Image 1 (cartoon, rainbow, N blue to C red):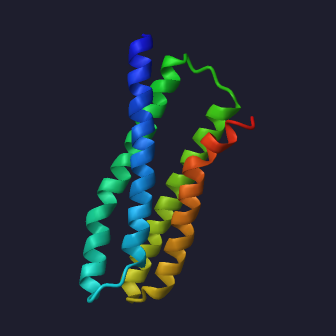
Image 2: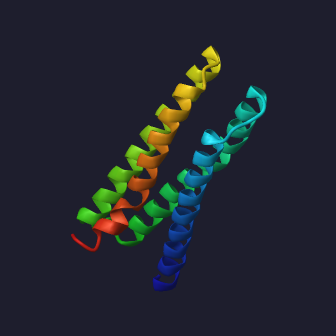
Amino acid sequence: MEQSYHFFLALHLYSLYASGFLMFFYLILTQGNFKTEFIFIRRIRLFLPIYNTFLAFMLFTGLLLLAMKKFQMNLHFWLMIASWILILALAIFHFVQFKKARKIRRYIAFRWVSFLILFCEMLLLFLPFVLKKYL
C-alpha cells in the first residue's frame, strides 16, 4: 500500500509539473506572433487536447491519492480541490473566449484575456504547495 501511494504521488507531482509547463507553453502559443490567422488557430486547437488530458490526469491521480488516504480531508486537500475546480472553470472560460474570438476574428482582446487567465491558472496550480508551508 505504501509503495503504491508513493508511486501515485510521484505521478501526481509529475503531472502537476507537466501541467505547469503546458500552461506556460500555452501562454507562449497565445501570445506569439504568427504570420497567418490559420496557423494561430491550428496551433491552439492542436494543443488543447494535450493540455486538457494533463488536467484530467492530475485530477485522476489526486483522487487516487485521496482514496488511498481513506478520504481523510484536511484544509490542504480542500485547497487543492478548490484550486483544481477554479483551474477547470478558467480553462472552460478560456476555451469559450477562444471560440468567440475565432468567430469574430479578433484576437488582440483574446490575447489579453488569455494572458490573465493563464497567469491565474499558474498561480492556482502552485498555490496549495506554497500555502502548505503556512497552514
